[in-house]
Image (tube, rainbow, N blue to C red; front, side):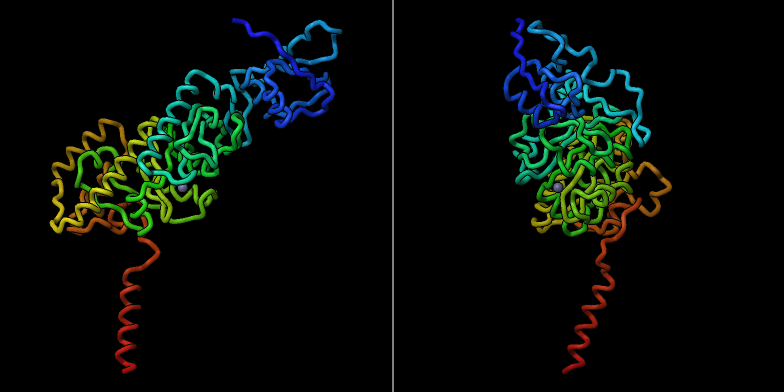
Length: 371
Ligand SMILES: [Zn+2]
């Protein structure tokens, strides 16, 4: 099945940019004729190559089919050049491999799951997958996760520069990239706003441990990062103290972020955390105390977790003195200050409870004294 060659001549243009490349695509041709001195921007070059449109240097022949450029539109498969950060230059070719196509489908399926579970609202939430040392496939900005198609996705390098794909990448990509740079075993990152987990994130509290086995094995201790404006580098870096030992972090006044070995698994962690928070909230309404798994039973769960190769701050027994397996020292509470739930790098929220109690007491005393 050989499709007929259709060409479009833009050889009068000195500069061929993305806008021209899009015009060429819209014209439905598979070859574009450029002048011998035309300059093609890298993004236009990549875009045309992605859509299998050959760049052909025009002007040599009089009617005979022009000869396609010998040089590949892409850098060679063995990339030797390095970016200023010491990483290999991003290879846009990774965006169209069979592996990439499968990942794109998985990202779309997971996006739909997030929307169906009400974990994303409006165009909220984002998903990514690290397909190469300096290449990450990610979701676009301003698209509902329900409506995602593989064509919506793009490829960025670890600095967030888009190297393939037509839709602009998510503005939250820096959060994902900080995690990839910090945790080499992280292959996928999912960020979303599930309501019950986010309820914890807006109160600066974390759920207790040792209530439900699945939560202990797949997540364990949840960390909580301080609030910063979304989309900024400052926000992206708030998770850095936690992500090595936590695959799931509550983002203060925002939502959650999870990383895993696959896109599907990262979404599972979001589900497990959300269901756990929801279940605790429901149990708290029953008027009966929550029963906890014992320390010994908890150790058995941690052993399973270690075998699965999942991270957990509780593996380091030197930290266990201040950080108990369970949080039985606060019986009945389903919302703990992060320094009880997260012993590694967590700080209590900015509201100092003692100072708050003192200010209330002072106000009451003043009211009495005024009488
Ligand atoms: Zn968000």
